[in-house]
Amino acid sequence: MAPAAPKKAIPKTSPKTRKTRAQIKANENNNIIRNADENASKTKTALEMPKQQRKKSAEIRDDETTIKIVRKLRKRRKNETAECPAESESENGDENKVSKGRKKKASKSEEISEPNKVDDEAAKENVRTRRGKETTKHDEQENGQKSKRNLQNAKETLKMSDESDSNKIDQKMADKTVPKINNLSCNNNNNYYNNNNNNYMHMEEEDGEFNNSWKNKGQLLEAVCAALEEPPELEPEVGCTHDDLGQFLLNSTIKEMFPFALQLKNTTEIFQRLISAIYELEAVQLDQLLDLYHLAIMMQTYQQWETCHMNYRHELLDAVAELSVELQPKDIEYLGISLCDRFVIGTGMKRKDKVIDMHSSIVLLINNSDVNCQIAMTTLLATFAKVSGLNLPEKETDVIKKSFEMAKLVDWMQLGESGHEADLFVLVRSFSLIMNTQQNRVKHSNWNQELGSEIHTFFMKVLRTVRFSRNYNFFAMMIERYIAFCVVRGATPRANPTIVI
Image (tube, rainbow, N blue to C red; front, side, top):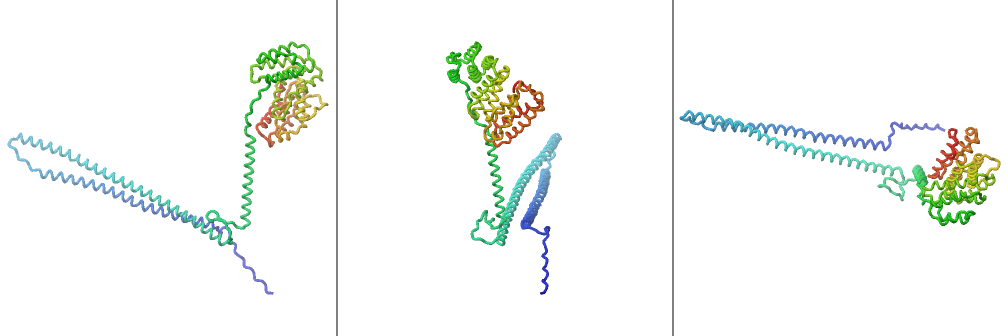
């Protein structure tokens, strides 16, 4: 067998000498534009040269005309002096002298008038020449504008021709490289054809994925904007009305104590008579005391838009609180749990509003006495347990530790993502009232090192869960601010214990 002939090495084109079709087109277009610019510059110079020559010739003509006019006037003057005959000498010397004097004056006047006439005629000629110059300038400007228009039209035609040439080249290349198919769909003047090339299909898939990603981002933005929209303004609740007061008294154990309440309708008279009747009471039973607490808390929202009766509302609650000076721990627990069962009712925002109304009276009870403070704490713990669905820890006796142990067992993430922001706010508010009470803080000497630091780290996590929940809205933002300022900040070493926040 003869050895195989060596294969010829195919010379590889270097990337420097390799040119694409787009580069060739760009070079051709640049050459065409350069030629057009050179032609335009030549036409401009050709148009500007006769303009300068015309200006020079016009100036020379103006000078020649003025010289000719002056010469003509001088000739006229000489002819007139030569034609006039010499006057005969007069017999009398006086007459000759007079005539000579007159001739001298006449000659002087003529000499003066003749240059004036020359100046007038020269001025007229100058005006005529100026007008001629202005007309020539106007004509030159029009010619310049026409030349500019012609240049623009030439450039546009060159561009159109370039585009047509490039389209023709694209069509030729497509006919050479791509096999002809019967059913071709033409778009944009038959420039693009549907090819069965894998690269083209891959580009279409990438475009589809890109569009889908942008659509998903747009949907997410719409959802965020819808979540952050301001909630519609709700009609304000009236609170406790006169009918509610009458219905409560009829179904309570204290209806015989206040028979006048159903007859009176003036707000100030009702408060004054109730306060005076409660102060007259000496001893009451436990059920009657519970109804009196219920009445005092309910009357905090009676005709709540009449702000001038705030003193009467607080005085009524103080009058009821004085009746519970000596109570057993069992009785205190009974009153707290019963008040929670009576006011913490409903679900969602309605229950949240009722709890907030109850908390306004609880703050007053905390500041009243130790017994009333204990009643308020048991009510808050019962509220926390009822809303969270947990049981109160029996081993712990400290109020803050009880509430914190229950807070650790709450699934805060589920409350935030399931749409129970109202319950979350009730729990946080109840815990903050327990934690920031001065009487509860006194029992903890190492607050900053032990329990305070634990509460701080734990509720920072709760804050982050609320902040990054899927249902983040205006109400969730308010809860986030409340946790930051009333719980996290209250647990820091810098915060001083207050009576209540």
